[in-house]
Structure formats: C-alpha cells, structure tokens
Amino acid sequence: AQAVWAQVVVGADCTAGLSRLSALPFEVMAAPQPVGLNDSNGMMKNRVGTMTLTQFIVEDTQGDQQLALLMNAIQHACKVCANAIKKAGPCDLYGLAGVENSTGDDVKKLDIIANTIWVDTLKNSGVCCLLVSEEEEEPIIIKDAHKRGPFCVAFDPLDGSSNIDCNVSVGSIFSVYRRTSPDDKPATVKDILRPGTECIAAGYSMFGAATELVVTYGQGVHRFALDRAIGEFLFVEQVKFPQDGGKKIYSCNEGNEHSWDQPIRDFVKDCKNSGYSARYVGSMVSDVHRTLLYGGIFLYPADKKSTKGKLRVLYEGFPMAMITEQAGGLSSTGMFLGKIGRIVEVNPEHIHDRCPIIMGGARDVNAVLKLYA
Image (cartoon, rainbow, N blue to C red; front, side, top):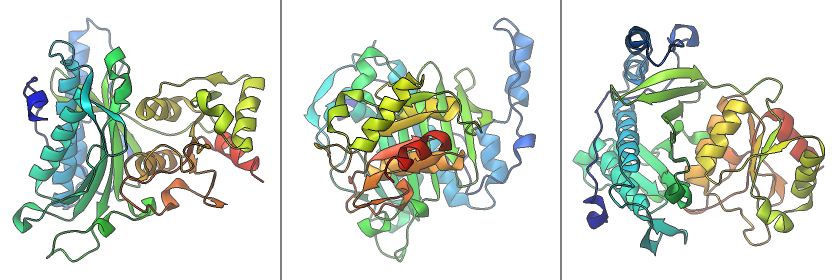
C-alpha cells in the first residue's frame, strides 16, 4: 500500500467541518448564477457570493465541534481522493493491485490509495473511535484515548472502482454513527452494528466531470460542487425528488435477470413495455446520483447466487437509503428474510453484511412493492 501511495502526490485545502443538523433555511443558501465561460466578473461574483461548504459548516455547527471536525476530515478526504484520481493516468495508477478486498473483489491501485486517504484522515481527526472500510477485513478500533472521539464511520473509499480504468465516474460513500458504549474504553463492533435509522449523517462524493459532495444529517439533502480553482465546495442545490416521480428511468444489471425473483422480473418487463429508458453505469454512486436528480428507480436485488444481494449494508445500503428518503424518495429491500421492509431498518449481522437494494421515487418503488402483494 505504501509503495502505491508513493506514486502520487496528493493534497487538498483543509477547511472547517460540517454540522449535525441542516437547520439553515434553503432560501438563504446562495446558489451560483448562470454565467458564460469567458465572463470572469460573473465567475468572481459566484465564487464570492455563493454559499460554500465551509460557510454551511460554520453557520450550522451549533456548538458540536467534534462533528464539525469529523465532517471537515471527510471533506478533506474527498478532495484528496479527487486529486489522486485526476492524476491516475500520468502516475500509472490504473490496473489491479494484485490482491482481493474483504468481500472478495479484486482491488485496484486506486482502491488502496483511497482507503489510505480515508483511514489516515479519519484517524487524524481525533474524533473517531471505530472505522469500517470495504477494503479492511476487520474494523479499525482506535485504542488511544487521546486520539479517539465519539464517532463510528463506515465507508466505501472508492465505489465503482471496477470502472476506473475506463474513466467512468466513481465515488466515495459514508455513514456516521455516534457510539453507544462508555467512552472511557475502546469502542466495540456493537457500536456500529445498528440499524440505519440510528445513523446521524451520511453522504457521498462523486468523482466525474465534476467533483460533488452530497450530504444529509436527517434534515434534507444538500449538494455541493468542488471549484478546483479555489479548492472549495460551493452550494449547488437542495436535492428533492420530482413530485411526479421524474423521468421514467430504470437502472439495474439486467445480466442477472434470470436469477431474480418474479416480482422484480415482472417490474422490469413492465418498464420495457411502458416506455421506460434503461440506464446503468455499474457504479452505485453514479446510478443513485442520477436517480436522485432525474427521478426513476435503481435496483440491485437479491438473486439465486447472492441471496442477500451484493451491496453492503453499512457503507452502501444505509447511507444511500438515508439520502434517498431525505430527498423525498423511498428505499426498500423488497422481499428479504421473509418480509418487505425499509433498507434502514435492516439489522446488520457483521460489518460487511449485505442486503437487496430498491430505491428511487415513490411512483416506481411502490410499483415494485405492489407486485409482492
């Protein structure tokens, strides 16, 4: 890991942290105005007048300095990852690292770099007591009482990395818990093996044509885009699903269709017969991001080979379900363990546990669930 890390010089501007609650009224959060590419004065006004993530953090912290430090660390990790990905080609960082991760996936060089960035940044924040990464077999427990705090963070440092070599959008996903065990002792895995309803924050960063950071604290969803020239995330919008369900788009890996249960197969067939468009990137961050902005539905159901689905609960299912619901959408497991329920109500049995995923606008998710009746 250190050898791969040494191949690239990464860095990001350190800024202030994010808060527990999104109490700031949407109306007062200044968004950028349309300007031409050659309108330097307009671009300057946007940079000066638009609400930055740093401002959002400072104004909305409400005295929770530890959570502010945590979210600052997450913001910093996203910037450093974006810089590393940008340099992947010239620094020979495409390709496999020759190992497998905790869930049996082939590890890319950038997986190792992104994991190092997230682990080191969160450790150095001084406010984390337990970390769970897709790339780590066991949880990372911070034992030094002087270097730990109240938060447990689960993260996928580089979601969709199988697409990285062909320059398809990838991202990072995270969820945050506040520990429940006494803080005078090291945290235990029980502090994070809890339903998603107990998450206090979640978000994802997407690295594509632009770098974006989408966050929720259970009070709506806010979207920020990185202005590389000034090294700061600028507010874009509050994310809300279209009331009518938005565009008619379904997103799933139809190569697994023969292994799905009948209601999922029937729903996809209905989509094809009713004029829906198929869109599937194969990176959860990209597919869910599009679904949030355009509408429609994203599915990664269980199948005969993966009876619990393929996506992990703590750092894929929970954060994306929390964001989807806070944006006005719905999330469900479909028929899972003998019942239909919300993704955030799943009780994970181990840190890399999995669950089926159905999420999107109410129009389409309800259409799927009706087929189970």
